[in-house]
Image 1 (cartoon, rainbow, N blue to C red):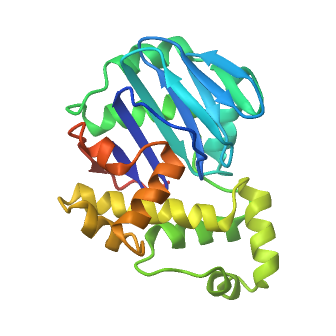
Image 2: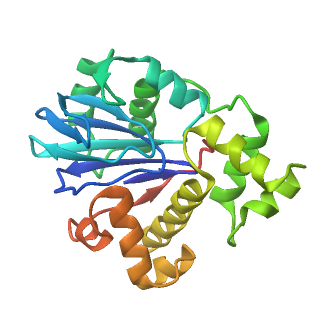
Image 3: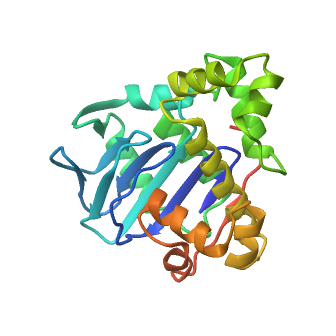
Length: 247
């Protein structure tokens, strides 16, 4: 797994994922076979590449041995550009990336030993090399504050910093990103916890660094967001790398 401020990439074995709802946009790639995405109450889609918006409850079933998942800041220019590169889909899930063939070939070459430049190049191809700007600089500032914060940040505090009422800030955040402030704050907490794991900490310390009330709270929230507990992911001998480019 590779982490940037506000972005993450997983490349590795297919995972047995339960139903879940993400906080940010997720690009899913079936490296060696198609996968299925089932929405309730929607139907099932089969694809090699798909983009699943935030807050869409779904279950993804891999058909092959390897998957790649790219998580993007919702509402960013790269998120919007990435959506524009998908050609089909239904039930709120987009399928068929226009550069699918190239993405699949290069996804197959990703490993724990891949240089950072190779990983960044793959994500740039997936998103269309767009810069990570936002249409609303206030929301961009709020998201960066959340990702980089070394303490919990209530919505009222950020709203005051931006000169907005809390209710106006919460509405604006949802309108510009497609996700809620609470859900994105949880994503930022996951980022902090993952960075602790990258530094060699255990799950208990990672939960504390992410400002979760307890390890069980961290595990429950992680399962709801990604479809499996963090212990199941770490049992795959996961390597976590932190990259510095601000996105």
